[in-house]
Image 1: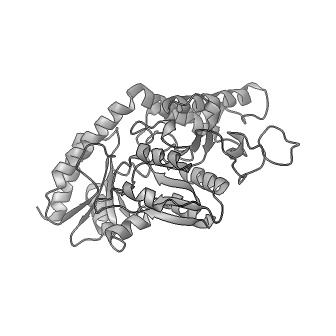
Image 2 (image 1 turned 30 degrees about the horizontal axis):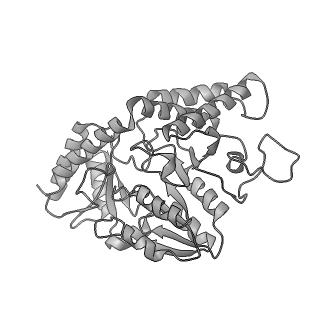
Image 3 (image 1 turned 90 degrees about the vertical axis):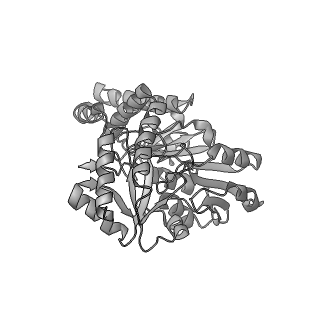
Amino acid sequence: MIYFDNSATTIAKPPEVAEAVLYAINNFGNASRSFYDAALLANREIFKTRAEISELVGLDEPLNVAFTCSATESLNLVIAGLIKKGDSVITTVTEHNSVLRPLYLAGCDLDFIDCDDEGVLRLDEIEKLIKPSTRFLVCTHGSNVTGNITDVKRIYEICKSHNITMILDISQTFGLIDVTFDMADILCFTGHKGLFGPQGTGGIIVNGSFDFDIVKTGGAGVKSFERFQQKEMPDIFEAGTHNSHGIYGLQKGVQFIKKIGTGAIHLKERKLAERFYTGIKNLKGITLYGDFSGYDRLPVISVNLEGMTSADLATSLWENYEIATRAGSHCAPLLHKRFNTVDMGMVRFSFSYFNTYEEIDICICALKNIAGY
């Protein structure tokens, strides 16, 4: 199998990730629940993973990293914990449903930053959307459809000047490019994509102090006679048994990234994407989506081929060439509406550090064959 669906999840991971999960399954007790060796071992490694992640983003306080099961859970917890009905919130048309649906559920007053024909957000519109009741801005760092990277530092400066809390979805960028804690007030991440961790891992990085409502509660292993869950980080988001097995695997993924360096990872993935783009951009009937004018983009390329639905193209790639891609709407409905691809969808190719140039060339040949060359 040639695997080009890394924006969904990375399958090829450093071998130490799987080794760590197996070790944890056989050796970890329930963290924060007792003082025998197996429980303390789990507790220490969970804290060490917090420290590794906080170091990766330049944060001094590891306890400002809370673990969840996914970016989706992270965004749900943060949005439900902060945003109230009637709050005015700014988001964008490029968002994943893990941002949009919690915002819809919150009942807040939503305004959307639009994008141009290449999916680049019109950041000049932000100031026009701000009103006295605007309290939050929620956006993605990198599009899972176009591969465009958002200038979040510019957005955050605008937010700070208007006392707006910025919540950033770093699902597609964390581990692939440099991400720092000072890009937003709150960052929500997943572990199983660019961080090379196991599925079922994710988290929340908090830059500052916020009065979150309790939206997830239960046993925490501390202060059991208190009626309500503690509101301090990271306890407010971590009721229940930790996924210590997955978190230990995530630790090894993060350590691998730190050893290789996000710069080297981004360079390799960028070259893979550039090779693919160069090989297919002039194919008859091909449509590409996104901004390809510069190099600062994610290794994500979404296409359509004239005369085929995205499902038909992806099926042909899989059944005839064993190339795995992602067809459809990619859980980004507003962006597909903007591109008028609601009915046909797109086929997304997303590359990883562990992909090869040979795989890229095979896929280019496959697309040429399907296109009739």
